[in-house]
Amino acid sequence: MRPALPILALAAGLLLAACERPPVQMVQSGYRGTGMDQVYNPRTAAAQAALNTVPEALPQAPADGPTAGQTMQNVKVLGDLSVAEFTRTMQAMTNWVAPKEGCAYCHDLQNLADDTKYQKVVARRMIEMTRHVNVDWKPHVGGTGVTCWTCHRGNHVPEQTWFQTPAQKGTFAGNRAGQNAPAKTVAYASLPYDPFTPFLLGGDEIRVITPGALPPPGHGKSVQQAEWTYGLMMHMSQSLGVNCTYCHNSRSFQSWDQGTPQRATAWHGIRMVRDLNTAYLLPLTSSFPAQRLGPTGDIAKVSCATCHQGVFKPMYGAAMAAQYPALGKRDGS
Image (cartoon, rainbow, N blue to C red; front, side):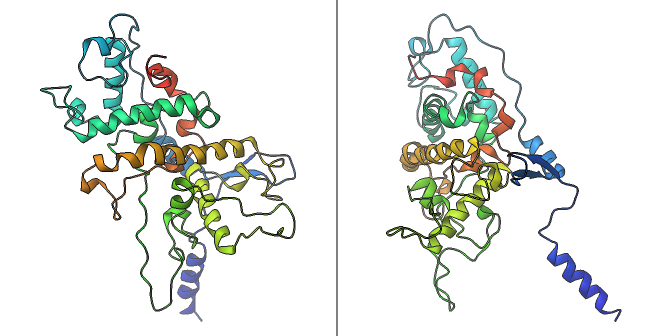
């Protein structure tokens, strides 16, 4: 019997491989008795905390005096700022996106007005996108807002981006329908592993649960559609470091009345991500060199993980954008 012990130990290890080592922490997020609790692993939380620190803000600059648009050449965004405030914002962006290369990452240092580098063309549009988020998407970002740091965290390209998945080739077992190949995007479940294209790029219907016990005539939601929806939900759960009850009451997932306020925030967030991908990122595809594109020739796009990076609020809700008011308005406003 003894030779069987190592086999039993190995089997037990495999069964428990996906389990978290205790202790874990429980935080009640709903009414008592509803089971709406958030489960946190303190070891994972400590690692995430290190990734969600806020860099020290640069000293404030005077907002009066000649503007950047009046004194500098080819300033197409932020031209309404004073020269001092413009310079401060540029320095902050350098720290957030290219701390090693400095200004040379986007600019020809012999001619700062030159637009030859694609990085400068992209950065200009990203400034407009950041302002758009802070001004027009308050139902999602609230007063916290975003800066370049929210996504980049000192990297040229945010670490959490995605490309479209190449079409699958058929196998002897048939078409896997875009699933049954556990992937990080859906927390290694065997759900469809590209929930981004239909929901965060396209506008496919996410809701699949009917309001009653039996589907009404014309409901037409298949099991496969439900699996795509669950794939997106797994991505959101993993991206925010929360479980389903952060937004839903598990006794009635479809009910808005029994959910939490965070569900409405998430609803706006999904539509915000779609907006950014279609209106700001896709149009930049031709600006990027081939080596920066994905396997199907598409540009890197954003998802919930791009900003959140494992926590329920980026940088735990630190209002970093308030330190850089230039990113919270449009030119001339």
